[in-house]
Amino acid sequence: MVAYKPHSKASISWSEFRGARGEIHAMSPKEIEALLETGPVTDEIISVFLDDPRSSVRNLAYLCLRKGKSLRENEEFFRKGNLNLLAGVDEAGRGALAGPICAAAVVFKPDTEIEGINDSKALTPKVREELYDEIVSKAEGVSVVFIDAGLIDRWGIQMSNLKAFRDALGGLSSRCEGAICDHFVPPGCPFPTFGIPKADCTFQCVAAASIVAKVERDRVMRGLDRGFKGYNFARNKGYATREHLEALAQLGPSGVHRLTFSPLRQKWEGSLLACDGKA
Image (tube, rainbow, N blue to C red; front, side, top):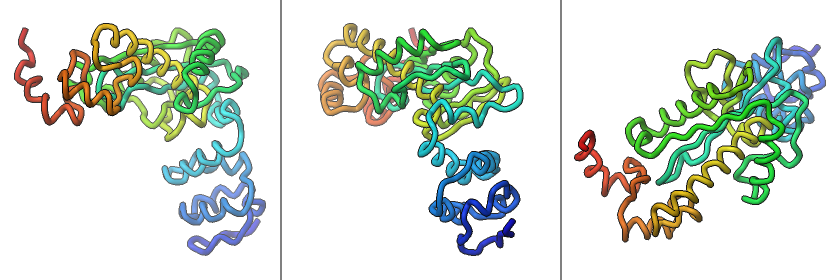
């Protein structure tokens, strides 16, 4: 074993660091990042990264996962001890100006793999619909939660996001022993829960949740399009496209717009607060 001198330049290959947990913990994130360029990284080293208390080092581990194994295989790093049934959680509609935020939780048996699954944003609507059907048929459990625009205005988008995540996990009909969430960890979960950046393109269960959430919310927005004419929710899904902003300028906000979101806030939030609590 080669002893590593902290703060020296990375000049040692990963083969000399096999099992060197202490040495890696002594390295700075920049030194680890430089060492990553010297060659492939073993599963053992990735496991050390994932256990590191520094988020910057754990993010390097997630980057390694996205470059290496399949989305299903990446989940095995989190199946330890009694943690076997791992749920993925993601949302759709966080940044929209209108409509609800939708969160989905999906849990698979460990050996279930769905070909072609990926972050919903990287897929066409047709492929998402096809994968949605396969996800629902093969999953051990699927849960979907919506929080509408009025509650988003009252609670704020971050609290709404966290509540949607927590409620989606709570709605799983199957037993859940752990969860990976895209970015955020909802409070109060009774099992290990991990908030991981870009989890929707790193882990199959989170990618599946992103697809379910996107498909379910798109269906709702098509329904809202029939009830609120002129905004073209069926096409823009409530996001700030040019046509949506032009419709807002002409028609004003509908009953499903988020009045606390910019650019609505500056012009219409005052009217919302003025009538808050009145019949």
